[in-house]
Image (cartoon, rainbow, N blue to C red; front, side):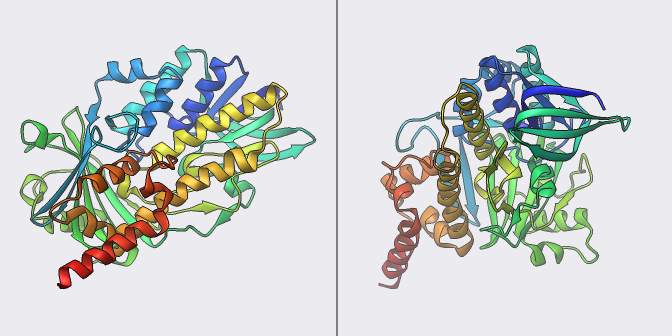
Length: 413
């Protein structure tokens, strides 16, 4: 085997891996990215939230993203039959970006990977990590290319940004029960031949079919729209008679009063994908010589589009801490990484859980809307879940359930 020595090996060239490797490269750290797939490749996580813009901006990726012409996302709409709630990211509590993007990830990931390479990041596509062992202060990583040729890389640090591939959790047996579980989704893309003009045609929407079941509609700038249905696994499985994913998603579309006519006769651009019991977690986020980021560490639920934001948040933080450590500084990984990331995940977990209990839906659709409450919830949905000045962050454990209880009492009067 041919040995290669690098300071940092990054597994995966999605948003987390690109943000972390670009940051490291900008700091003159010797970094190598290995990516199992050949780009472009389809992947979920097509709706971003504003917090990701901070990370793309910090590492210099915004100009390339803007040049690609992706659809800008100014907020999000939630629909329950005749009830509608729209969140405008420019009208939120606290500071932060007022917009972001909704993108076909195959195209987006290729754009940022190409830009990272232009900046000097070394990315090896169609290369797979098959084994890892830790010796003294280094890791020995076995990598196989598409032809089956193996080589060993010595790295001081590994950042696992492999997403749902979850390379190190599998190799190191780090899987743990998820805090949010029991849901599945089916999704596909369609040429949006009946797309309305103006804002209506571009607005991302979450259409509630039942309290625990909802349809996503994410329009892209290229005329294609992503459609997906999410709900308890048993419900999703029962949407079709024989587990047919296309039949299931067509049934879900037929249950939508708002989108039935727009999509019921559309053909799909690829066979609908069934993601079963997608939530995941790990027993630890870091260890000597490695750190887990993004979906390789945990995934909650697609309802508030938090996946990519946590991926880039953890990716850039891991890169910053590793840079400090390489420069001889002491890093408290438990406090500065694990506790920080877990705090944000905990806040979003509360919102996801309260969505599926129906409590958050009561708050969203209550009339007249409390605009102050809406602004503070909007900041959470925008990804600013570490801002303790926001009581809907600081008191997340009880504020939503207490408010829903109060609304129930008001309705009983």
